[in-house]
Image (cartoon, rainbow over all chains, first blue to last red; front, side):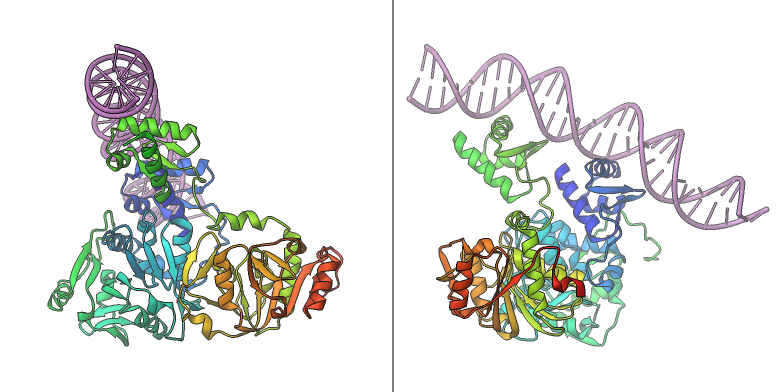
Length: 267
Length: 267
DNA sequence: CAGAATGATTGAAAGTGATCGAAAATGATT
DNA sequence: AATCATTTTCGATCACTTTCAATCATTCTG
């Protein structure tokens, strides 16, 4: 990981949310706190980011009306470290040049950072993901057509005959509201619709869920377990859930989330 | 492996990835680090790559942050006042609730500002337009699907069966490279393709061109004059061009870009 | 054989990580 | 509300690693 590379990561990270902590950037880049502080210092000199206690913030004032979708923003503050670790593991599954599909969501959005150095073909129905990758990476971006739903932050077409059908990928990555023995669950009918369109357009279906999702239940079942190729989650996954996945013949990847200070959750 | 060959490899390598390390280039070329450093040095002298600690990076600005598309940005600085006046006139043609199509371009992009306080249905193939309207307006945004072309800043699908065919609007707004007796002209084949897909999806075709475009000629003719419903331009339009439009039965709107104008007072 | 290019070596320079005391923020007590 | 103690973060320093530049020996080419 080189200096310039870290700088790019830092700059792109502060644009996703109002502030990033030094610790966040450590896990994101894999370097020590001292180095991150030095980086923030130099970027502060270059007026690229603003240095604040505990981390850095975007140079643009809090007129952060952007990202069009409050629920997205509030959700994003939860379990950031775990989500980032999961997203990193997801990107590590891919090689340069791969074609992937990323379904919109707060967990999958975290994939944009590790994807910044890649050159892949990314198809997504998420406007923020497309926007970020367009501005901060050299990946080829393909977007599904349709109306932009502000609350869910996805693009969805009411028709079946859109480009989605013409795009096929190695892997599809998606989040979910819950994951239980019944299958993959989602709360929003709109999201169900969006995900239904994408499922089946890839060889493998990779589900990104932080461990809290194994306790969640929702009314809408998106698909059954056997439809899932791999689940990526964090260390907090209950043994019971792991056994359930094992029984359903689903690969399980547990992402190690580096320095996390949430020890109370496990016990 | 000859010097020139290595140089070619190095140059192409830095364009793929943000940074390449000396070690990367060693394995890529099979020569020693010393040689790679010498190569980077000479290429740095020739302004072909930028030398950084640990390797090299592309000569293009340190961070390709921003509107993701250089040509877009440089174009945007020209004739701003005229373009804004034209764009304002274009938006004034529309009523609340109208459905419109906006084809991507620097002139049509200016429509986003007057559109900010509207509530309309906007279909566009331009990522920047969608982004801006999404963040700064309450219009309903619909986007065409496909790959995002960074240079042209448009989204284009190679397939004919995308949502574009399912969207029909009152008016379609588009810019052009040139406008002459032969018809509407464009320079970029990709833009032609994008525009071809949208033309025919609206009752009226409104062309936004600043007056300099009447002098421009391009190799590719998009459509003939009689296909155009209305042309909006600025005061600089030559009499000859006005007569030409008159003869072709095209409505002509001349937007007043000066400080004195009748419509400005009302708003 | 001459000239140039390449590879290896080595001391210098720069970057990185860890440690420790100082400064700041947080919260608890009076 | 003010003060004190605890925790967190910061800045500086030092040791260690990586990278650089200069030099010299070797190889390749004509």
